[in-house]
Length: 426
Ligand code: PMP
Image (cartoon, rainbow, N blue to C red; front, top):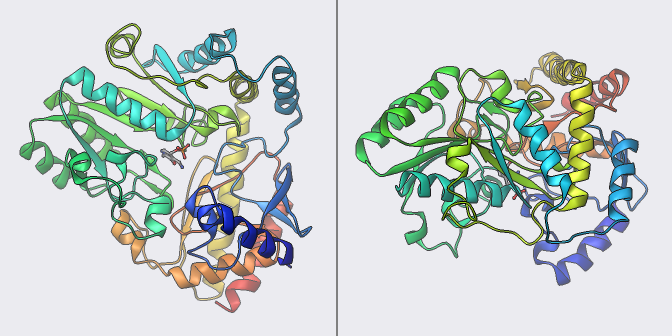
């Protein structure tokens, strides 16, 4: 079934390290060869062997409207025909910035970059520059991209590969990164007692890189209060949850609001893009208005801006989409939970909007350590068997899944039926 993909993977391994351009794609934690994808359409992807899969990854989140949405495709083609990049200002950037600013009370300005990694790296530089402090607090299991000072007990591929940090990152560059347990207020308080040099907390308010583990309300309130008390800034990394958890991401469903927000792939509807945003005072520190340097040749790329604008326009025009997506995510995980129970398998499930996660374990994990105690062998077998039956889930229990608007209830029910068949033998 994977003959051509196996060959393609062998060829890729000769010229690309591990055959992939982002480690998690290599399927190391579930085994087997990753299918090489030829094309996508709606809720489905098709590999080079001709297999068709119902796609619960959707390019790791950005494709809310699924693959090759007609409206987005149209504006992308139209914009691309006018030039792929200018390295000069375009109205498209202002339009997309306006759309984002209009949605939030706590944001006046946005700076576009080309990836989530750049967005978080730049947001931290901004926080350090504004506060004139050096330390940052990050939480175990939260992934904020692969910049040096953030590669400390990160989730996602870093978790899969079991690297507490990466070779090539001098400890001098991570000594300002203070690590705390997610959802642990006491540890956070201690951290602030021990350092008077804390510039910011960076957090995924709905963590999606250790599976789906939402922060508790009390924990986020503590983050906010401690930042205010000690003159630090709170950064919500919404690279994954932005426009996914709700139209306003995690910020839209939480009482606590951050000082700086980071966005990523979702605002480009599948094109490479990222952004960070804050109020006008904080953003005025950025070059060329202020002295904090940050730049990018392809930043605000017109094709990415056009795709993002169209996607956002469609989402705003029909807020009911979020109801529908949430219901479908719940239908899926509740269905999985039910069949797991019938098969005497402990399964914990969670959703936030169209993001979902499931863990093979007894109790709902609240932090990275608890996620680490889940049954990874069982997940791997589940993943392999579901793939054979045409269901493409994220290839690690440390990753979240995503629902797109094109998926139907019938397709979700078919998936649950297949899951029952698989779970009987797990
Ligand atoms: N922050 C979060 C929350 C993410 O999920 C990711 C990527 N999955 C990043 C940052 C990094 O984004 P990118 O891969 O686009 O650099």
